[in-house]
Amino acid sequence: MYQTLAIGPFTETEQEALRAEFGATFMATPAGLSELDESARGAVRAVAYKGGKSFGAAEMDLLPNLGVVSNFGVGYDAIDVSAATKRAIKVTNTPDVLNDDVADLAVAMMLMQGREMLQASAWAHSGQWANTGEYRLNRKVSGGTVGIVGLGRIGREIANRLAAFKMNIHYYSRQEKETPGWEWHADPVSLAHAVDYLVIALVGGKETENFVSREVIDALGPRGVVVNISRGTTVDEEALLQALETGRIAGAGLDVFRNEPKIDPRFYALPNVVIQPHQGSGTVETRAAMAALQRRNITAFLAGNALETPVN
Ligand code: NAP
Image (cartoon, rainbow, N blue to C red):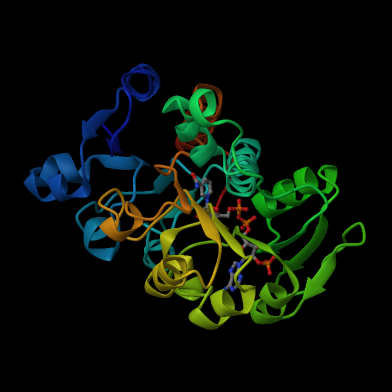
């Protein structure tokens, strides 16, 4: 009898649903695959996947009857899709259902940076408001100029929100898109030159590694704020740290990092960085919608129906 195997840090609620719908078995990381005996590995037809550990050719080859890897998340850079395609394994993801939450967090980090909300809150908490008077003036966000790097599903939601903040919207994408008067830039350096806030909403993976390079960061200038909700890999993190440490840019709001969750400790020392623990889609409502879409893709695959959100 074929099995569904769930790999990754699934919550209790997610586990219950996977157990109820598919009788799934669980494994914390793909490293556990090599501990299964041959018949258990041969029985696996569907993998429900979650988390950033890599799932590539070696893992797939341990599961000779694997037909689908249903990823929890829109970003599937942990899964080697070309290795899957070569083996006729389908990969699915969970697009769209998380756009709102991720866009909300990007906007929130911009506001936190501009209005110095972290510093102002610390000021009030410490009693300085009562003891020494008003907090210093900070920086207007509405009406400013923002650049979105990657006007995909999430990038567009961010731009729509910022348009309501009366911001001038600029964006980079590989081709110009139909937009309500937003300004397209064919390269990210030109985009960074034109704006004060640079919001990164690219896909992760090898193709976009260090896309926001030292040159892009320097083009942003000393009033510049970098907001990243994509993947840590899309930014040259060393260049970003140096720019933040030396005041070559004003600040950053970051939900994603290299080496999460053990991020570079230099970030902890920087007062001009808002650190979020990769929680862009981390609401009860959205995680439930992502989990449900992940399961619907498995159900469709096992029934031989069209997949709802296929990647390959
Ligand atoms: P999407 O609709 O596929 O948009 C991706 C964007 O990346 C598009 O604008 C696309 O450019 C661009 N892109 C793709 N390949 C590129 C390349 N080789 N060079 C330059 N640009 C490239 O994806 P989405 O649903 O908006 O999600 C974007 C990413 O956000 C995900 O992949 C994931 O990594 C991340 N994410 C993070 C969180 C979080 O919790 N922080 C949650 C969800 C997603 P074109 O417009 O030119 O096609």
